[in-house]
Length: 358
Figure 1 (cartoon, rainbow, N blue to C red):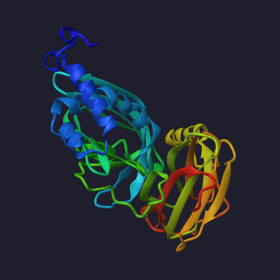
Figure 2: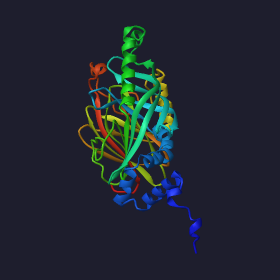
Figure 3: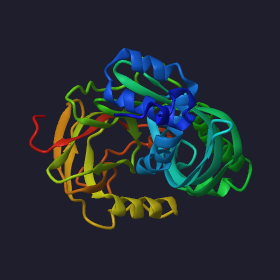
Figure 4: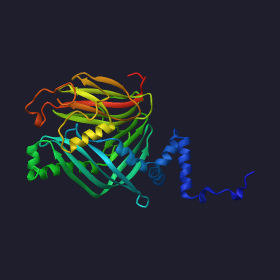
């Protein structure tokens, strides 16, 4: 028999215990709209859930993948930023999270060709999320830029532009880079977690909005990426990295290219990171430090599907529009330095069982 006098009253329970009860109930009855509505209606519960179960995952998730860079108003990616250092600080009193991060990357420009850079910044975000019927929306709304961004050009491919970087042109290149990074920070981000995986988008999306996709992926596999990128002559793009979590899994890639034919290379993340750091340091484009695990050609105008079984690990899918690496040589175009003869590739990459239909 329970001693009623010793049983704690719900009204007298500490807030953290009430929150645990709310979380426990929501997990047991996740399909019940009443509990979803209760969580959505409580700022304290939403913040507690995020600060205890979401904030610590920001940096690991951020460092797993590169962020595409675009030239407005062009929606296609023209470069990548690779986060390398990241730290989060949770402020319970203000209900904010400060993310301090740094990394390196590259972007193609008609002024300098492949421009490599480093970036460091510290940004304070107000975090929130919403449990919709079919997905959970996690938002990072920028509150203020704490430090930076500090943007430093480390190499410029075209030597004339590199020489001019010491004068007024250098100011334009650095201003251009800072505008890219500032716009990435100022827009905040949305992560949509659903049955098909996590989708990342710059800016704030409201349910039922989803990030734009060039391909429809409704197979139930985990979706890594679904976007369009430009690969200019004598350039490469590193898609990913993509993580294969267990034995018996494969990457499922769908690709469609407009423009010249391409080589597609599959390489390990360590090989890819070493390769891109050499390029970002001003090295000439050459084959990767180690031979690719596999490769194939991408023919323009035809959607191509590839199932790529891999051992557990992290991998890049490399798009090669050069005469230095694969077997396909892009045709010469005198306007290549100004954007001519670029390959525009729409692609989707998913993770699934290697024996699944595709």
